[in-house]
Length: 549
Ligand code: AMP
Image 1 (cartoon, helix red, strand yellow):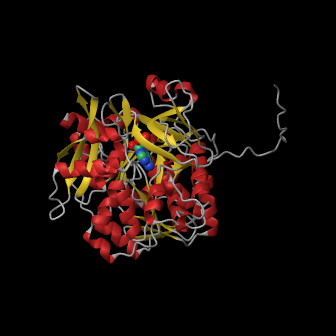
Image 2 (tube, protein in one colour):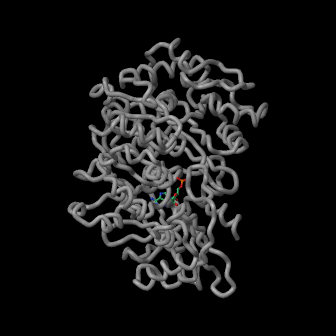
Image 3 (cartoon, protein in one colour):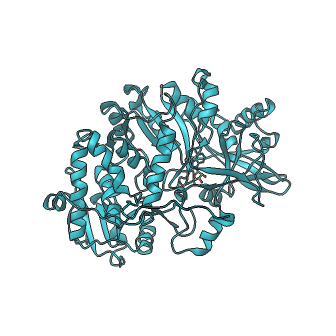
């Protein structure tokens, strides 16, 4: 079939979706709005705009040109936000380094991404001492230092200190126009085995992700809604998938933003109270830490909305947050997907449901946001039934997926087999369109040939009042092929005086009531002191299997 092309006038402007466009609106309608760092420093959006221009001039003076890579090692800060804009707006690539990687992994990512300039917080300098003399690509280092921070001894020679460089630079920069498909960001996934894998996103992808996520977040009348009167504070690191893209969204909206620096639960709670934070996002572990902090009783959390992602939110955690008035709901995505794919908002009328019924929905993985095509498929790429029961692998298409892993054709082909990005997540979709992840393909437990969901079993076990934390892995079994092994961290006494038998009884009770499959009664319970986590706070199942099996 031939299609008619739209005719273009000779002088028509071909508008490219560039990150610099996101910054224009707030500078017009919210120039005096605040951006706060650790409750200690305050900037207006007008100043943010000026500082982004100054940073672009400073980086240019250091020799950065389009196509170069500028890496950052910092906590969540106003500086990081400035880099989110200035670096890609120059036509350079922003490499957000995972500061929780080991020094060797960090060295690997710096080399692999071919970083030209590295901006580093004084606190992370000791990491570079471990790899002294082995960083080949970086030509210039810039020091990021808080006023009250101590500068450790270091072998690094700095081209300058961030604030001094900004102060000396002009506050106007003429940001160029270029192709919207230009690479804007890159970072490395937090695989627990093997080398980290690099993903990359273009200007077009980040702009479309900003609009897609915002369209979904702004749709509900009240619940989980992000709007211009919100006060935003990230509690997922900015190095991890652009803090889920939310700093771009918050900036475009011109809302008050609070960047907390290093994550200390008491300090985060203090900021939520003093800065009147209303919208955040974090992994379940962080929410758990905040709710367990002795400080939590002093802070009113009833105006706080929190998007929970990175791993499944246990229902018990959701209920304890809801008890404090927190509007919690799930979000789902991965490093490879920019990241957001689904959000678990309630539907109209569902706020009238009981807390338990609401938690059921809030803990689902969510409904695909605009422009996301999400399928659950079997090995032959055929869709499985959308009946809330049949499970398949989640495969997706959206305009904001990484096009492959950097310099790794083989794994990239596998990621994109059949023209869809393979998430390696196993899920069902129900009649209302909600997706629910039941496992990672690698974490699935097969008992006598039947799949059981380790996440579902973890949810049931964590509902026991004496259980602090739990992770379920599959252990080899002669008769059944595999059996679930539940690693349980008990709560401190008096709640913690629990036996393995009592936990198994608790599971059997759920199974007898038809709430979980019969095979789970084969579970073996083992008490442990702690559950190992990955660098972004997720349960490290690969590590747990190595340790306990
Ligand atoms: P990462 O690339 O480190 O962000 O990890 C992405 C993976 O985290 C996904 O493929 C899922 O396995 C898991 N994940 C993220 N969000 C959720 C969620 N809401 N529920 C369950 N698993 C999730």
